[in-house]
Structure formats: C-alpha cells, structure tokens
Image (tube, each protein chain N blue to C red):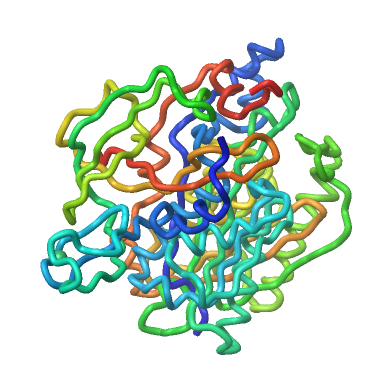
Length: 347
Length: 132
Ligand SMILES: [Zn+2]
C-alpha cells in the first residue's frame, strides 16, 4: 500500500490584488479579475524563496506523519524558481529538516509539475523497497514580467508530501498514477533570463487542456473509473478559470473542484499549485473518500493520481491546515511589491 | 564582507536547525554549541543537542541603520530570544517592531539571511516568528 503518510503546505502572508497591478499598467482591474478568476495572489517576504517555503511545508508534513526525519530516504524538490541555477535546493531542505546525510536528494524542474513528478519518483522508490519514506516537494516563487498577464497570477507557495507504504501510517492511498507527456512549446524561460516567455492563447487548448484532459481520461481508463466515482477533483490551476473549463469538458460537477481550487485566493503557485489544492482537500476529506489530482507542467505534461483517503487522515490534526496560511494576510501596494519581488535591477 | 566558506559550512547545523550542545553532568544547554562545559570542565561530557525552536522574547530592538546586505529589510526587528531549553540567542524577528512585546511566544523559522551579492552564496538560517 503506497500512499501519503504526511503532507503540509505553506503560503507566505503577503498579498496583492489585481486592481493594484492593473492600475499601474492602465488596465481594468475588474475585467482582469473576472477574466482570470482571481481575487488576489500571494507574494513572498524578502527573506523567503523556494527553499525556505519548501522547509516550512516539509516541517508541516513531518508533524502530520510523526516520522523521524532521519528515516527519510529521498528528498526531491520540484521548482522553476530554485534559488541557485547550480547548487541543489534539496540539500538545503534535507539539512534544515534533519534528513541528512543518509538520504538521496535532487532538484526537479518541469514548469508547474515538478512536484507531482517527485511524488511519482518517491512512489517507485517506496514500492520497490529501496527506501521507507520519500519526501516530494513543490515550491515556487514565480515571476511574471512586469505588465505581462502572468504578473496578475504568479504567486508563491509550497506543498510537501511524505510517501510511505505502512498501512498503519498511510492517510491517503495512491491507488494509481499515469502521465501524459509531449514536447509542446507553450511556456519557457531560457538560462539567465529573468522572466518567462509564453505562447499567449497557445497555452490553452494544445497545452493545458490537451494534457490535463488526456492524463485524466488515461487514469479513468487505467482504473476503470469515471467522474462520478470521485468525491473531489484537483487540477493544475494557472488561473481560476482553466480548471473549471477542463472539468466541464470532462463532465465533472464543478462543485467537486471547489475545495481544491486555491488559485483565486493565493494565485498560481506553479510547482505547488495542484499539490496545495490537494492539501486543501485532504484538510477536509473523510475516510473512504476518493480524490483525483491532475497536475500540468508546460513543455508539457500532466501527472494524474487516484487517491483514497483512509482513517489515518485524523493525523492531520497534528499539522497546520492550509486555511491558516490563507487567512493570514497583509496587502502590498505595487511599489512594495516591486521591492519584494526585486523587479528593479538596482535592488 | 563575505564570511569564509568554511565558517558558513561549519555553522550549517546550528543555523539551519538550532543544533547546540548540552552537558551530560550538569544538564546545561548551550547555544551556540560549546565544546567544554564552563562549570564541569573535563568532568562533563558534551554532546550535540537540537533545540525545539520554541521560546520567548527576552528583549528586542528595531534596526533602522542596517549593516551591508540588510538594507532592503530595514527597518527590521532584532530580539534576544530565550529558548525553552534555556539558552538566550540573538535573532531577527519576522514581525514588525510594533507588534512585539517582551514575553511573547516565538518559534524558529528557516529564512534567507543574506546574499553575497548577485553571484555569491546565499546564507540561510534561523529567524523567529510570533506564535499567534
Ligand atoms: Zn556541566
């Protein structure tokens, strides 16, 4: 039985509203809010980055699991905003949580789905008995070019999943996983480039929708299930609209997406987005309930997971719920936001 | 001035996860870690001890004129935190000066401390946040 034995999320406390950004660029805030389905987005503090947020989420996951960090056999950190181009985030995280030195570790990058790729790697290592516990983290403090549509949505957050196989510890069994992967040039950032480049409308149908829907359908076939067999769905959420559209096309009741749709209040947290959505669902799910998660990473690919919650879900009481971080907020004006995100070269 | 790589590296356990030391004979706890107990001298045995990260504000102040590398963060709060296990340590507090009182409970948080310019090392370590 391979599954989640601990999970934790983290969202920084600063927020900025689309109106505040729109004002600077002469756009209509209300129209953008409606168009993207977003009320506000999270912004990291000056001393926060993908590594520090990964540590916060990992510590929460460890609390829920009650497992000694020394027993972790692998640490994978997925991000597209690793603090260094060369020098692993995973070693810093492993050191900070006390998992070193007897552990595997590596950084992963696959746009917004490097965290879910980490879960799949840990599942394989745990199922093959190579390790007892593997820690997979998605963490991002992503940037949008000033004035670009992404500036309204690019948020910051992290989620960590401790994967194990002891029935007495698994709080959600991962019954199946599959991936749909192609080379699709929808979004990229070249080495040394400060901000990413994206294909505008091209990021929709051939990228997000094709991959999310194909992976989800592939999982339905693999597990011989259909939409009505699941209590909750979590899709990657680059904005507040895309996941709802994907659900509609797949014949999924929009109400099943609501609990896992966090982008409208924290922004797109990239590698953490679908994993934070899952954390939100796990915070309320009951034993026996089923969850389908599909991530998406530009470039492009989607990982789908079918989960079944067990009675060990009660262990979540030992952690900090996502709602705690969502509720703690302090608003920034655009000027302070520029300072926080160091968008001015002289900073 | 950039800290030497060897010093940074040696201090990772104490900075990342509050690893100090303790004396087996008199049960005194030390942070930063000591190699010799000042009371028991050679009669005590010193071993590593990781502190739980919880403590209280013992005293605090606000920094308006920061040393190099901290300009963006000013004004910020520095406090002496008394750890649950006893030792007092100086650290940055993530909350603004106006929100803090002596005696407030705090917990350790892993944050970025300083960057050695655009191409140098990024230093991480402990700060404390208010427990609400
Ligand atoms: Zn002693």
